[in-house]
Amino acid sequence: MNLIKKYFFKVYYSPRQLLMHALLVISICYLQLESDHESALFKNIVKVSRAETVGKHDTVLIKHLMLCINKMMHDRNDVFKNTESLSLKARVFQSVDADLMYGAGACGGFSKVFARALKAAGYTSRIGQMKVNGNYGGHILLETYLPSLQKWVVMDPLYLLVFTNPNGQWASFNEVHNNWDYYKKQIYYNYNYNYNYAGIRYTNWSKIPVIGNLIYKVMVLIKGEEAANTISLRPYLLDHYRFWKWVLIAFYGIYVAASIKLSNAK
Image 1 (spheres, rainbow, N blue to C red):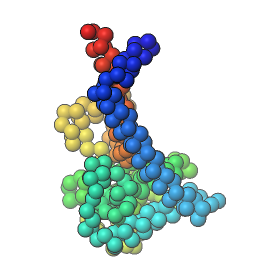
Image 2: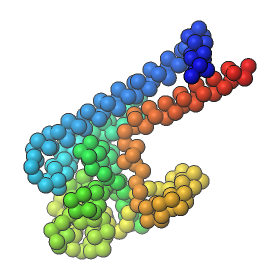
Image 3: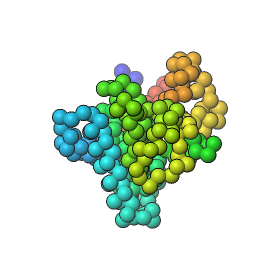
Image 4: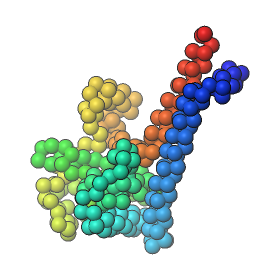
């Protein structure tokens, strides 16, 4: 503790060090403010849906939330028509609130925004890349875990799709995959039938060479192959401001520790 006090006492009398610390602290505070702003936005969206579905089954709330997101994004897309010029902040952070504001990003944008809203509502979701014409990533959708059903159910916020199995319950991706001829009869929108639920990938481990495969192998050892294949990392990174805030906090801690060590070595 005395070393830390001594270090910051020196910082106070060093304009260069003081500026460095001030920039880091201000950046962390800025990212926290942006994260709080985005979180409040989605909490308000959830609040409206809860008010409209009070006392009803959680599937009613989730479907209402999907309808709200779909309408908001389509309305904005009708205005901007994918001609928007993104600000430097939106390009750098690629935050979900930008997808919501402009209604951009097609299936990927719709799924990210919906996943962010589900998180605000207290639900766990995972975003998946559908296999289309033999290639993963041709369409993006998500699955939500329903505690009441104790299962993952597949949802497509772009096409407002939720499938119902013969038991009257919402269906999982695998259920739709295994009986596409049955479930495709439930499609009622202007649908692209190339999206035929041929397969799904939740995380592209090969996207980051070497490191991605290494993380996958560690996941297999710790959690097992099934868990490694079904974990979706993207929902954990939807709050980009929060993510970069913690990156900066970690960097700040390392910077202070290294500076103290270097100062004592002199």
